Image (cartoon, rainbow, N blue to C red; front, side):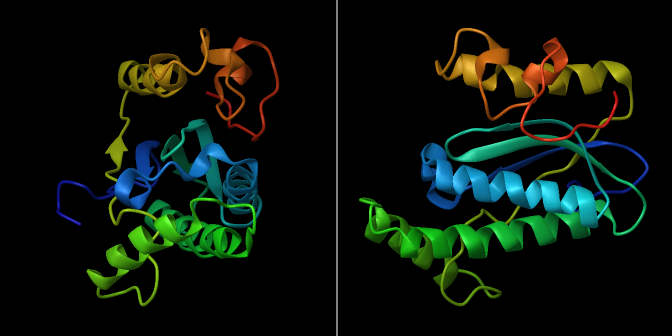
Length: 182
């Protein structure tokens, strides 16, 4: 990762994006979305992940995150990506109803062939480009961007109607994942 894209202050929240290799639309199936959400919940409960806003799209995720101390944000992101990569890939392999299985595994396999660290499959793109949110205006701009993603994609007319997002939480409802107070 270049020097530009590093977490420098674990006391600040960061905007991060993870994209699936080949921009494959993996998260069109509940089983894969559930693995991602369960992993985020685990990281919140056991690794100090602080989640402020999020959206899970069909092939990428945007989040505003922080760390409750140790481990560092970069370590939490590494563990989250590693766990979800392994378990979502396993779920794809085990899913007899997955019509796109061979195609997806071929893309993830080719991505791994270009990687030094991965032997068989590489689910996520390597980077996550953390952007430090050092003031309230930048934080709000990124949060609005996150929540408007499903609207811009044409999935819903209003952001709070998208289930895999924190937009509902900011409109008085209760979303799928626990959020930190903003």
